[in-house]
Image (tube, rainbow, N blue to C red; front, side, top):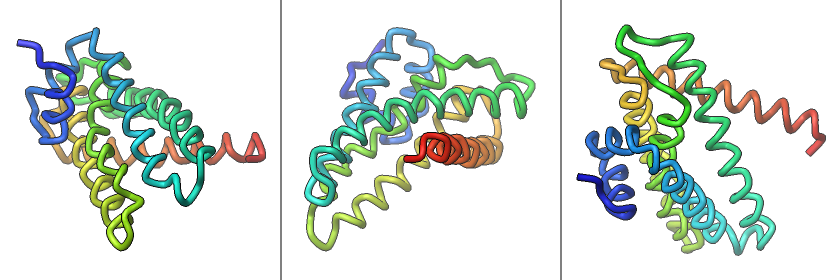
Length: 173
């Protein structure tokens, strides 16, 4: 039985494997996953609004959506093409969905403005999101090994960071 949007967000944040399996196979969940990405970007931007203003919010939203798409493509290439397991069967859409919902803990970043605890909230949300991402990668790529999912997540992160660094250098921003 398909869960609703909020239940999927909660399930992903709870590291619930059936939730990740459900969104992986539900092609209509891609828009929902994008919704999670945008909501997390808004939460992050609002948490930093005092520090960066409206421009921070807008940049956070654009960066989050572009980052989500690039991240899914990078993880696909690294995890499904370069380092697959024998049972790996995946496509970019499955990664978009699982990685989008893996960002669910980032909704807590809306509390980043709180004095004395805002930084801690950001850190905890980030660590929690990394844990969700490992589960998302493991499920989307049909890995049996969590260690491989951690490795692919880390390799994907480094590759993604290099891509963004190169783009930033080429655009001069």
